[in-house]
Length: 148
Image (tube, rainbow, N blue to C red; front, side, top):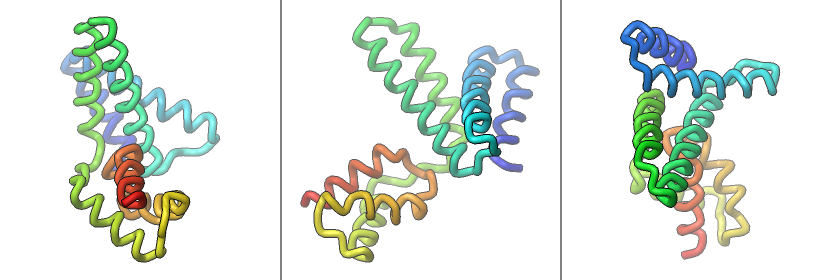
């Protein structure tokens, strides 16, 4: 079963259980996937769906930041529950140490010397990590290693 089918089946289960929070979160990620598929006029690959899930989590984290500024605990709770639901569809995330090790090896492989080589490092590293970590975290670690 592919990832999109897994998400759809989870929606069916949430509907049968009348789990309002899960239904809402899963519908929003299915809508995001469908919108991108319509824009591209093609079905998304597993990797692209994982990227959409990471983006949806990022959006909710930004919502939490805004809600914190406005002291809106209700919105924070909803966003945190959504993140938990969306995260269950992502592959197990790599540890920071493992990402650092993979980054170090990639930098050595392509002989990257400075921050100007960041694009080359990211191009080589992202397929190796295969969606098992958010791109923002990966780029932060690459920057740290290229600047040191």
